[in-house]
Picture (cartoon, rainbow, N blue to C red):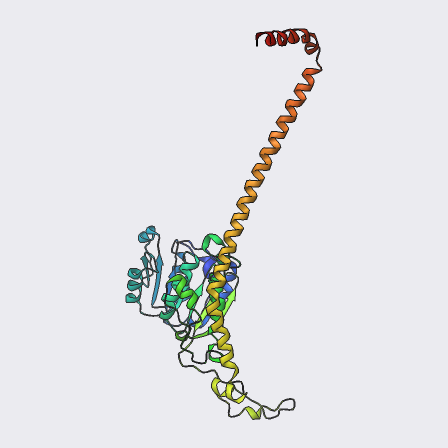
Length: 349
């Protein structure tokens, strides 16, 4: 009998609450289905009311351990009927909570980051927990739309945002074609320095990175894996592929296609990116400050213009009142009195 879909489990769920964007259901079905009947371990960072843990328990009926972590103290009071579920309360990126989680379950088949969504937390969590994903396992990050919002530490033009980091990981997935075993630089160094974490592209093995609306799923690869080119068929009327045989892996491909000299060039371009990025970011930061100053000056100018307009209106009103007074009958009748008063003032001087 076919297992129910994640969407059906979610819609029929009762007890602790949970919320997911519509696009997540298809994303998770595509990437998690292979694990449904396996004895997996799962960690979710950020559980809110805890309902997602119950839903994962139903989606993975043979899971052996389902852990949740949340900084909210009220999560201590959550009680689950499923004995596989356990909640750890505290900052997942703190050494104390990290040690407790890894002591409980040293490695995971699936990790879902649904935590604070702040750029720094997203990247720090990846640096800490991606190494704990089993080869072939997946690391999912939710709500990446926050990467574009300044209040979460992001922005549409901020290179070191969550999305900027994940975009760079796509190069890491292809590092066998450009890295050329260079030891003098690390493509992820700008992120490592900015957020104070251990990140080195040479240590990361990624088989797949998939983006969908507000989410990213990263499938971990195996160290030492070398991609291979496979050829089938016996007739090649357009292009003869037999000359590629006995091609087996990436290194042979580079040598066979006579592009071995280009790989160091591509690596040099990556090196240039790493070394110039701090200056680019500094310039961007200066531009942001200047833009903020321009906005402030515009606000001050608008305020002065409004005050000037108010003063001009008051002056025009006063002048109108004076003109009306001068043309009034009472002003003409009292003119002799004003002349006499002025004459007496001059006599008293």
